[in-house]
Image (cartoon, rainbow, N blue to C red; front, top):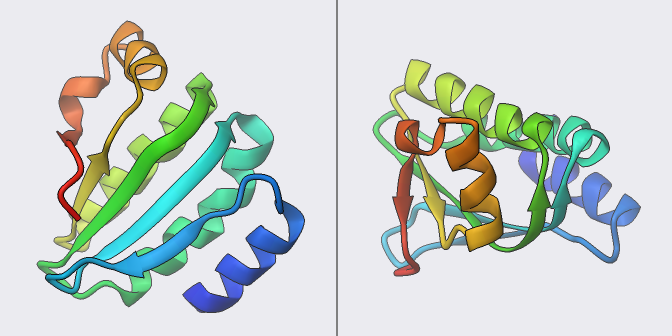
Length: 123
């Protein structure tokens, strides 16, 4: 499914927690997630993240802006980990951007934060 279609489909079903897509000044894809990354949302976001990987060129970057994510479950962390593995297979760099302390804490408890590239906002 093309990224624009996946984004539209997701946002129609989640008007209170939409995902915004934009390009950074360098041309990298930035996906701004919002709301809660729990089991249901993670299942519905997965096709959108897969579509984003398909439009990103090899050696490109995808930023997942998490500043508006209020909660993440272990399933949400699993979604991020699966996306990171898929990105690495395609030689795409996945960067978590502006990870809120609540989200970072869950990832630290699960022992997975160190596997991700994490940056503060610059895009």
